[in-house]
Image (cartoon, rainbow over all chains, first blue to last red; front, side, top):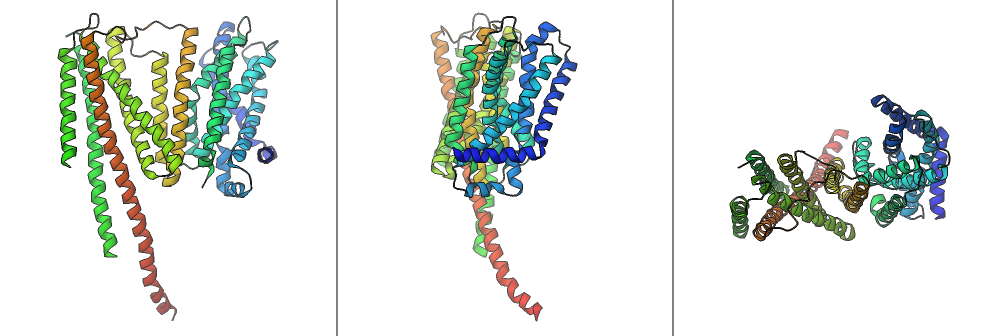
Length: 221
Length: 46
Length: 243
C-alpha cells in the first residue's frame, strides 16, 4: 500500500503544480448550478426538494470531465508503461489514482457545497458532519468507477464523450442514493437515512472489489 | 378487436427487428466468407 | 448446412404455432381484450434478453480468464442480440401500456432498470466501436460488461427502495399473477419460441464474428508477408540506384 501512496503523491504533485484541473472542475460545477437556477426559479421549499438532486448532478457532470485526464494524461508520453515497469502491483497504481481523484473531487466539493448552500438559501448548520459522510461515500463511488472507466476510455477515440457515456448510466443507483441521503439531511427535521447510507457503502464495496479483481486487465498493454 | 392497431404494430415491431437483424447478419456472413476466399487466394499467389 | 436449414425451418414453424396460439387460441382477457396479447411476446422478449445478457456476461468472464478470442466473439454476440431483444421489449411495452393504462411510460423499478440496462449495453457496443486494437477491444469491453452486469441489480434495488419511499400511481403488475391455465401454456410456448429465435440469431452473429476474426488474421498475414516480398524486391533496386 506504500506503493499506492507513492502514486498518489505523484498525482497530487502533478496536479498542484498547475491546479488547472481543479479550477476547471470547480468552475464547471458552479456553472451547472447557476444554469439550473435559470431553468427553474426555486422557492425555499423547492430548494429543499430539488437542491440535493441538482448538487449531485453537478458533481457527476463535473466529475466525468475531471476524471478523463487521469489516464489520458499518461498516454501522451507513454508514462503508464514506465509506471508498470516499477515493482508495484497494478492495483497500487489504480488505487493511487483513485485516491488522487477522490481528493481532487473532495476539494472541489468543499468549495462548492457552501456556495450552493448560499445560492439556494439552505442551512448547513447542525448537519455538516453527516453531510460530509454522505459526500465521502458518494464521491468514493464516483471516483472508483470513474477512474476505472478513465482507464478504459483512454484507449478509445472520442474519450471525452465516451467516459460520461459509460459512467453516467452506471452511476444512476449512486445518484439516487446520494440524492436521497442528502435530501433527508436538508429536510425540515434533518435525519441520516441509514438504508441509503448502507446502499452507498455497498455500492462502493462492490465496485472497489471488482476493480481489484479486474485491474490487471485494465492496465496491461 | 379493440385497439387492434397497437397489437398489430407491436407484432410487426417484434418480427421486423428480428428479421432485419438476421438478414443483415446473414448478408455479412456471406460477404466475409467471400473476403476470406479472396484473401486466401492472395496468400497462395505470393 | 442441411442441419442448419432444418433447424431454421423448425424454429419458423415454432414461431408460427406460437403466433397462432397467441392470437387465436389464448382466451380473450377480461379488461384489456385483444391488446393484452402483446404480453406473450413482450414477456418472451424480456426472457430472451436476460438469457442473451447472461451469455454475454459469462463469455466476458471466460474471456478474461482464458484469453481465447472465441469468448470475446460470444460476448459481443450476446450483447448485440440482448440489446435487440431489449429494444423490442422497450417498444412493445409502451404499445401495450398506452391503450390499457393511458400512459406510454412510467419510472417504476423494472422499467427504469431495463432502460439503464439498454443504455449500458449500447455503451458497450460504442466502446467496442471506438477502440481499434482488437485485443484491447476484447479485454476492455469484457471488463465493462462485468461492471455493467454488477450494476443492474443495484439499479433495480435503488429504484425499489426509492419507489417505496415515494409511492407512484400503482400500475397493475400485469396478468402474471393468477394466470388462466391456457394463457400459461400459450405463454410458455411463446417464451420457448422467442428463446429459440434468439439462440438462432445469437449463433449466427457468433459465426459472423469468428469469420471476421479469421479475415482479419488473413489480412494481417498478407500485410506482413507483403512487406517482406516488397523488401526483397527493393533492396537490389536500391543497390543499383546507389551505384
